[in-house]
Picture 1 (cartoon, rainbow, N blue to C red):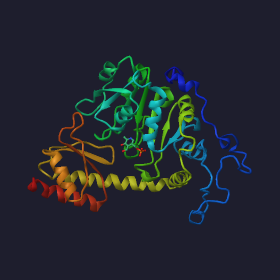
Picture 2: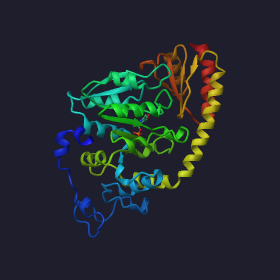
Picture 3: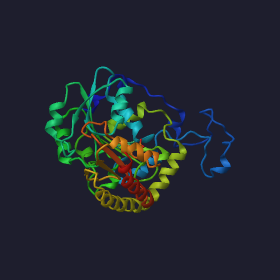
Length: 355
Ligand SMILES: Cc1ncc(COP(=O)(O)O)c(C=O)c1O
């Protein structure tokens, strides 16, 4: 039961309650939050946005818009200041520091580990298989009685591949804790690859999404989770009252209206990825180009660290992932514009001569 997984002090918590959250729908003369009644000092520059008033703590407009967009009930949606904030909040909801533990399936996104370290929650790891695929047996046999959460990422960062939904479903069936499936890059994958439907079947599956990638809204800092309504209610209990600001809210609502633009960009980025892969194949010293369902490509090559540094000196920044488990001599390349990718290839071609 989800209720049994939530930490007791949070179950008992009486959340901070603003008067605005009680009377939001009613409106009226707002003398409850010590705001500036005259407006903001930059009102003239942001027409139509009242920056002097606190934003909606219930995130209603955003929740409604995403509910319609992805066809998920509003009770299952919660927004964070990037999905990174939601990772942090989820861990605070379920994991008692120095008591509960988490399982991270590596190699994967580094924030699961960082957040656990910040919160003093111990982690242990289990490895993906040689194809970077998840195996239920391996994961389940690694689970400790103290594990409250398992972190998975699909498409996985930095390996780029989708995880098998069937395997994740088996894990959801046998693991009594929370399974987080981070779908930050799902928009770049084939249709139907999302595991969002697992949330309907299994109360312990939590999906993370972000506006930072395919939507091109990284600067706005906005991500969301699709989860059981009980998880959502408790996330609302522990979040900072006004976490999503008005500028972000407006920008994201506009982005959702421009949904088609996102799809066009995804197609362009995927087309660039295909071209980039073909160009990388022509570089003989690259040993391996891993398949990618995302907007980045993982490659293996000799002297990866040195090559990454030489590229950086030439003004092309890519990510060295060599220190992660299983990723010796691996670099992760985000797909750029056509010109950026050409420059990268040019540099990769001459770089081998310089080291
Ligand atoms: C797998 C994954 N999850 C989450 C995030 C964080 O996204 P946000 O910008 O929404 O915090 C990233 C960012 O790189 C990521 O790669």
